[in-house]
Each structure stands twice: as C-alpha cells, then as structure tokens.
Image 1 (cartoon, helix red, strand yellow):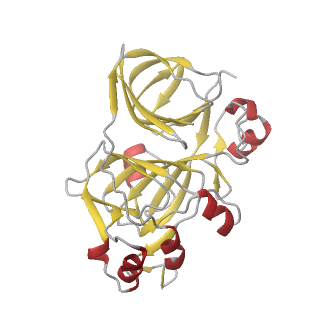
Image 2 (cartoon, rainbow, N blue to C red):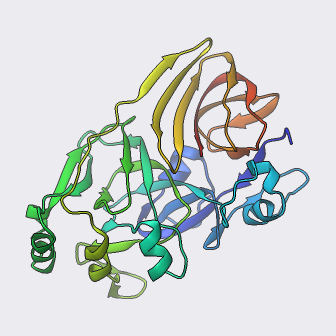
Length: 313
C-alpha cells in the first residue's frame, strides 16, 4: 500500500490543560482545559479514526487488526505505539509508569509505558521533573510518606528542542508552560505519587494517588540522564536529527527547506508535522497533520518548508 493514512486526533480535557493546542496547531479543541491530543492512537481509551481514503471512518485498531500487512506483519496483539501532543498550562502530577511485566499482571494485561518527550515550546524559565534522589527503597518510602518532595525530586531547566527518554520506573512530570510531543508505548497506566494537593473543580475532590503501586515500580537508585544529545546529519535538502533508537521506538526529526528525497525504512512510520507546510509525494501536509506511512513506504519526496517528527519501531 503506497498511500499515507491520515488520522483524526482525539482530545482529552485535563485539570492542567489549556488552549495551546488550538493556538499552536490550529486544532478545534473541546474546552479551554484541553491537555492532550491523542494524535496517533489505537488504544481503547482513544482510538483515532481514519480521515480520508478507502478506510475513512474506520479506527486505527480496526485497520491494525484487519490489515496487519500495512504494519509489516508485526506480532504485537494491540497497536504498540501512541503519539500525543501535550499542553501543560499547569504542572502535571509527579508520576511514574510500570514496565510491561508489572502492568500485565496488575493492570488487566495493559502494556507498560516507556516514553520520550520532544519539547516543542516552553518559557525561558520552564522546568521539568525527571528522576529522584532516594538511594534506597527505604529512603524512597520515607520521603514519599512524609512529603519530603524537595529532598526527593529533581527539577531541571529545559528549552525548546530538548529531548528526554523516560524508561518505565522513572519519576517524572511535565511542568507548566510546556508544549510537548510524546511518543510512548500504547498504555494508559499512570501512577500518581504527588499532585500538589490540588482539587479537581469538576468533582470537588483531590485526584486519586497511587502511592503504593508507584513505590513498587520506581527504580532505586535513579539513573538520571540529561536531555539526549542527538545525532544531526545534514543531507541533500534536509536536516535529519536522530534522538533515540530503543527497543520500543526510534524517533527522528526532519527539517526540509525547499525539497528533498528521503529514504526511511521501518515496519511503519508515525509522522507528526510540527511546523510549516508542503507536500509528501504530491499529498498536501501541514502543521498539525498526523499520519502513518505503511510498510513499504520507505522512500518519498517532500516539497515545501516543513518540519516533522517520525517515530517507528
């Protein structure tokens, strides 16, 4: 199949969300507290539909189930990856995600969640929480149960263009005034450790914490790594920036100034257009578009001034 599969995004209201997804990408968001755009997802909690073509209106999970050949015949039971765009107008909770083994046993067969973040935009003084300072599990328990958050948590200054790889078991949080591209395993399991004692205006209650499960899965001692130093290659007509190539996903950014021919081989590729507009093999693409290049679509022509991120397996 040599046809790109464009998807309709799904939006999620969050207590920390805002309006940046509308302001930056032009999306028609449902509320002024829209925190997440599930841009490419086959997860049961947000299954994107196909925008046009032969399968218009079908869900990504349906195509994955019925046309596995478009995805290189991979064996994963569920569509394995999920792309989000996140508007943190306020701080997200301090949280952690389980690995595959723990999630499978404790969360009804869910996948674990390793993820990575590309910082699309942020303020000059924006921070990100990544990692912790506990040296033993006993010290972790003491810090958490006694609310010693200043002693436990690591906050780091960030800037646009930074990229962070966040394995399962890593304490983390996106902080306010940050717009993020996120690639992750297709999982919706999050264990909140601390939520700043804030109250959800809709329920009048504090949001649920998952302290004991979080303590179970947090890796101790922490192995904090700074933002990834990418591999940057200047090609004919474009710049390719490779951020990560892990067992779960590979992520690269491509910046085209006018026109370029690209070769990119994978079982399938998930593409999000971050800026600009142009065409991919004469198909119009523009900022905010999210689409899949199916198996075999491993070379293509790009024209226009456009920047996009590709994530693949």
